[in-house]
Length: 253
Image (cartoon, rainbow, N blue to C red; front, side, top):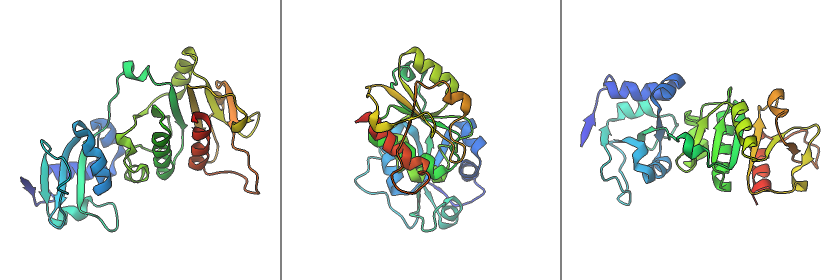
């Protein structure tokens, strides 16, 4: 088993860069995860795992299938360099972002489109909820938080390994979906229908927008219908991730 003890090792420097620099994640199509739960989900799709890094104070569970995976031992110094959590479990993995070709994308008929949502925790929660609902994919538009930010990854709780999450031009996606007769729903306070009054369809795309300003006005004009979660109490709005969960289940079930 390979062992690394120096923080100056080129691999360690690369791992640290993946943690801190979004451009590096975008350029390489790689990212880092931390903790037993995320890594257990990752190794169910071994082709996306490049290396598992285990510290001296941690162990790989015997129930894990790590055959043919590269395992690297690291010392406590490197563990602290890579840890993003206060009480790290001392296990990490270097992974590849999931790639999906256009032919596969053309089969997606239930989608969540996210327009400029900036909070990584909200993005991760929405990815996790879309996974739970059985959505085909999540499309992140311009201005959205990075899907592979460590906070996003922790919030999504492993759903990145269950559902495709890609970046895309939401205007192009909406045009393509409408060409395929997939209904596109926006979310807005004005000129909208309560989600529970909709006539349901097996196929749909839901667009949700920025925490403060909502969906881009030009994008909103392209929707087939705009919907809303009725507010019965005195709160003036819902958190975008909470509203997304309610709407996705309302549309899907």
